[in-house]
Length: 294
Image 1: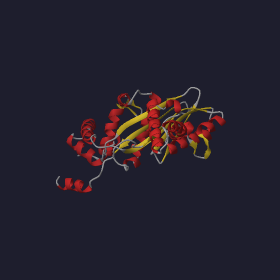
Image 2: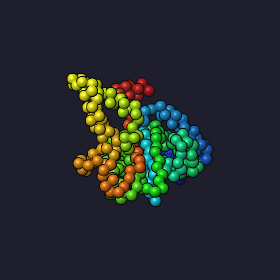
Image 3: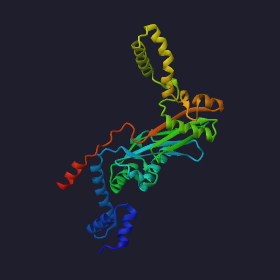
Image 4: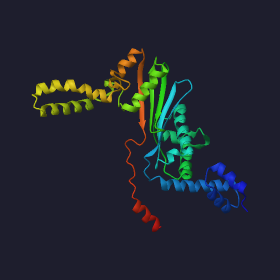
């Protein structure tokens, strides 16, 4: 006979549901180790079935070491926003971003093969498979960025309980300025730090569009080209952080603000949950029909 203490022990070791634990213990005559193997096999099977589902919800998280020299942001996706409120999922995201910061994996594939810092007996991939099985949704580690500085400091900001995460590297900046810059990045969505980082082909394409617009206004080509030089600044002010108007004081730019404080901006990263991902369109009638038809 399977006892409550056996079920409790198996649940604590695997995180699986009570009924599932009781079922596999019955099938293995109470052998905990065999039951764990069986749960793992079934978890992998369940995870494989869930892996084809679109995961465009989830969380972005951030981590900075105590000395402020190493930091990371990461995005972990799930299928529904309900999972983002799950304490187990939140902890998994926190563990992943911390592991990225501390271990410096080359990419997501390399990260998946590492020993999981929260449970070194498993790889990150095995831990991910277990989360898919126990939480019940497809979960994917989508991307991460890691910064390490020797002569500067890192700042972080997470907005909307994990909807947006920002990591910034600065030099000679106090906590208030660092926070202001992080919030600027979160709100204004810059794509580049400065003009030098913008690909030339992107600039050329924008200038061509601006020229056509000016000529469509009836301007001669020579005048249109001069107008382009004047208007291209607005383009830079939208996509380059240092050229953006500072949200707290539109009379100055971020670049001028930082310079006035004797500080320097070295780089930044901004992740927004689900950006660029196609979300699953729910068809509830179809879903009900599937359930009725088995």
